[in-house]
Image 1: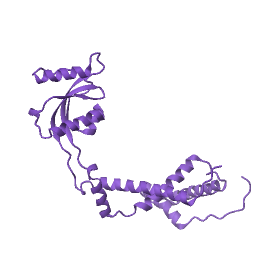
Image 2 (image 1 turned 180 degrees about the vertical axis):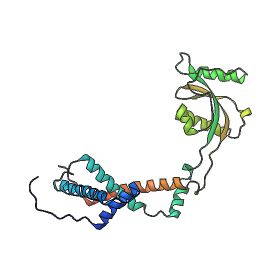
Image 3 (image 1 turned 90 degrees about the horizontal axis):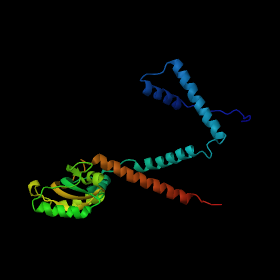
Image 4 (image 1 turned 180 degrees about the horizontal axis):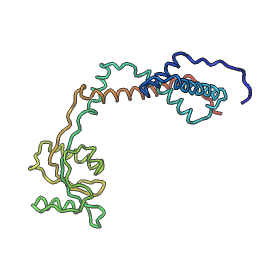
Length: 249
């Protein structure tokens, strides 16, 4: 490391108060004199080690330190941008994105499954079964790995089981007869899923329900702050490109 002239390092009064406060928060009491001396020596060692490491440029070309510096810079930009949230602006954000906060529609349905792993034509079998059901036949199909009935499930929950295309088709079928009762429900299909084809009977449909700004306040605030934070990071990087000239050798 080589000899270096003595340097003075000032440990401020506020730094020492912070040490004691941190100790008190962790242990719920003030440190004893002996404990404070150990704490003081450890903190001074940390401070001197950081100063020496920076003097030796040990922070250079270290990916962990670089990532942390970037994170702190971006965090500072986000914190400055968030500040005090104006409720009028927050309400405007909620109204613009109101559909994101409404209670999702829910569907209750039964289904009959026809596997496309079967050597026979799954679509054709499903279509023939639908004709037979219309004539009063007992519904039959292939065994399904999960349930044959689903009660009050959202479109997202249905998509998690059957796939998005199936859930989208259920939404369309429900919209065609939104107020039909369970006794009036009819088998429809075939509807394609990630597994094969299905005949579907939608027995209940609860349309999406709007919520008030007050009911969605916490979610709205979180989303608003996330959007503003993202914008702050984008503005930070844009300003850096304006501030510095980059030359590629």
